[in-house]
Structures are given as C-alpha cells and as structure tokens.
Length: 88
Image (cartoon, rainbow, N blue to C red):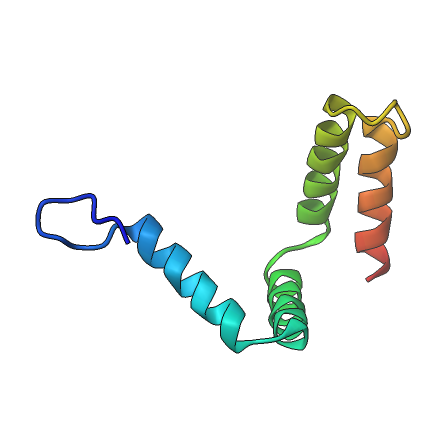
C-alpha cells in the first residue's frame, strides 16, 4: 500500500481500488449482474429516448474510430441504438 500524501493517508484512487478488490472477493457474478440490472432500470427511469439515441450515436462514433474493419457505420450504430431503446 503506497501512501502518496504527507499525512500517511490513502489516496482516493488507492481507496477505490482496494474497495473494488474487496468487493470482488466477497461477491460473485450474480451480484454484479443484479446491481447492473438495477443501474439500468434506474437509468431508464431518469432518461428518455433521446438519451439512448445520443449514447448509441456516441458508441457508433467510437466504434467507427476504432480498428473494426468498417463493420458498421456510425449512422447505422446510432440508428440501432435508438431503435433498441425505443423498443424498451
């Protein structure tokens, strides 16, 4: 454990890392699936169709900028993201 400040206090980064490691030791795959599902439900309650269209477009842009051999255009990825969110 490296203490980076003068008072021998743990940095936020170090505390977060240690907390994440402890959580991973104490919980299994189902735990993470459950909290992910809860997070998704909370997000859908707080955001509308436009939010999902926007993040779909951003995902499409990121995908088109990566080395994906041009498998999907940004427009297509954004459209698919928007369609998927409108169905839910």
